[in-house]
Length: 403
Image (cartoon, rainbow, N blue to C red; front, side, top):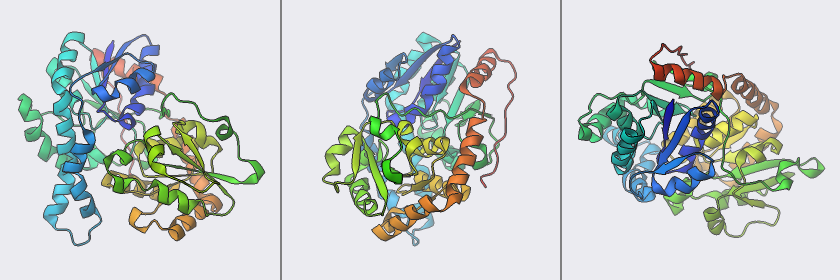
């Protein structure tokens, strides 16, 4: 079996595909990872065969032009219905535009390499086009709350005309033939799409973590990890709130604060209190097992990694999908959230203090980690993919309502 995996050009959207691709290759199948040119080094670092397709897209410019003007609408109680509807449809225009930049070459790759399946992360609509072009199943791989299925009505308003119609394909289902779901079933949204559960295995890049961070903190102190993901800081200066949050959390008593940043973020971090440790490029999954809490912006990879490690978390959301994840987290009992507009020293300190001293948060986080550990591993998912590629019946599992 040959399987083509595709993501758009952000590392955070590529990382969750890696464990399933590894499992597929380990089972004796061929895989090829494909994305925009800027992601090629990241794909090669994951140890998998990779191809760059399409144009070098300026994703920051696209986001600023299409999404940034609408972010404020999300928090505006006086926003009109028209503005809110525009907010719901705009992400699909954004992802459609990204798909244009890579679709032609991805389709060409699919026609020459002839995969039996195309697996795409939920924003990589070019994968749907490529699968349709060669008439093979398209498999959607999700790793967080199914925000895009939640916005299905907006997706169906935009994609037929704005993307699929350009290729003469107006009737493609954005959910694909089946959904591989790596999010805890108890936290997932109810839907009627065909799903197969797959265990989330964190992959956060190929760097090493400092030895001091892979051991428990000294003196009985509690270590809190603060990260801002890999993407939000690229969208605009106003969205890079990490320095102010780090300074606020550094004042929490008896806490060892560790800030994880990318090399580009380190340049923008500025001076921090001496007591704050900064680690550049350290994989989150190697640091979290010795942390008592995680504070972050609400990226799906950070959410799922903390859940898999049984670590309580606080989300400081800025954009709609982050707020969506934050509400799911709060409902699960494994964490809490503070909107960025309310994230002052007092509110942040109180929220972190609660995460560290209220045992219910850690109990809920560990319960969900145990649930994730019981989910079928990627090796089982490969067997399911093999049946799908051969045309044999598959056994799908419905998701539960988020509690």
